[in-house]
Image (tube, rainbow, N blue to C red; front, side, top):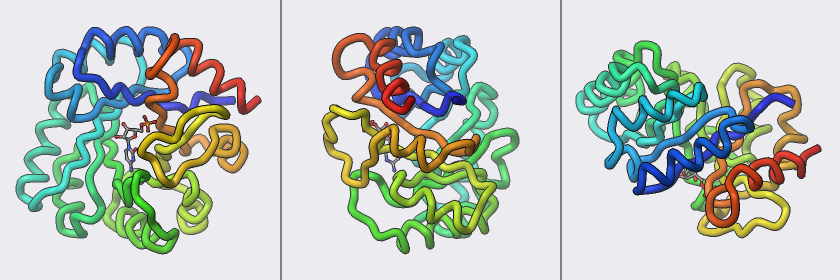
Length: 218
Ligand code: C5P
């Protein structure tokens, strides 16, 4: 099976993030960095993480007036180390269009509704369709909406947070799915990814934890 897990490095300590990245590097498809880590490690930290040879996903969830978004996306694109950047689809068509203008080689991913909130499939579909129409490369949705997104687009990349292993805690997530079920419904889809954080890094060895999650789907 192809690697389909992006590991969320939700840390405010770069050494810790680097250590987890090192432990998961052979099993992960990519590394996800949020504001918490980016604020303390900046572009130098991203460069070090990019050294693992995995795709870097910068999850800044950009949401602002079009002019500010356009300039933010240009700054991130200029770093060259980032493959994916998130923007909020709820910012609207003009904001998404402005983001596209300066994205250069960045893939833009549209956040639909946070997986920590309740949402109907219809709500997520409307936002995902807006992302598609606005030329985004992918969207973020829960795995519960994956098939509904695939019903109108085979091309959008779909990144699904809220994925858990068999015995994992759900934490603050609401729209969740087990990793094995996710792999089952997204089989052979090389544009579908799971985003997993706490079940991998919260306790024990991150390297062993990701292996256990992957084995749960075999
Ligand atoms: O620890 P956990 O597996 O819940 O981490 C999920 C990650 O996915 C976090 O980094 C969170 O910021 C991110 N995320 C999310 N829901 C979204 C978009 C991103 O949980 N809609």
